[in-house]
Length: 258
Image (tube, rainbow, N blue to C red; front, top):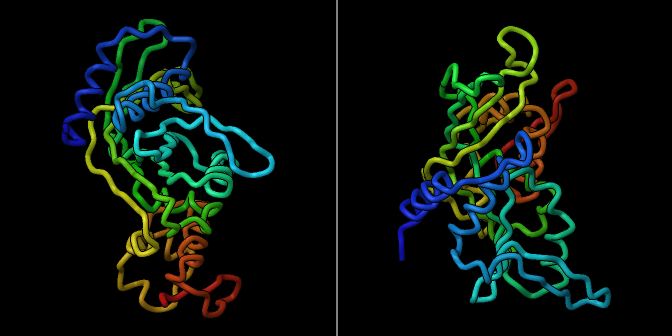
């Protein structure tokens, strides 16, 4: 059996070598990564896109991205996890299958800017923005009740990607409001598997600044999460019993580790 990183690299090369027809700007970006990750899990098309019937009275059906020969459902979600809530509830409440959600994180991203007329790359740089496992934690708020369930697990491949963007926006150089042209997976840096509640709890930042009561603002500075991600991550850790509320300072809620 090929090692995870080697297999991922081979599939990246195959995807880049394969001639594809573009249906429109940005349309292929998620499809390419989604298809590559399905092959990375199991490179057998007969295991892809399998209909799954429920066991309840409603007898609903969903199509699983992957059904392994061992009878495990794997759902590949390259975008936000929120749209999966009905499908995941169906798997967990109306079937008996083990379920793994595979959610890639863009750990390292290079951005190449394309001239929309000539198609030439005008500039390339490493993006200062990157995703960490805490970004995935922030997306698990709708699924708190499943965290730690023996049938549910989360797989987080940390990948390096090249993002091509068109200089078709406004502002200086046409970068603001620009469109993504393509997202190319380059390599696999690491893979994190989360199954038990302890696995999720272990991602809580081990920082001396959080040993005393802290606010969401402090948590955001340390984790570099932004906006709603800060509060969603705190809600998940609170649901797991890692932290609890311990008061209020003006309008800010105070938390401490349990």
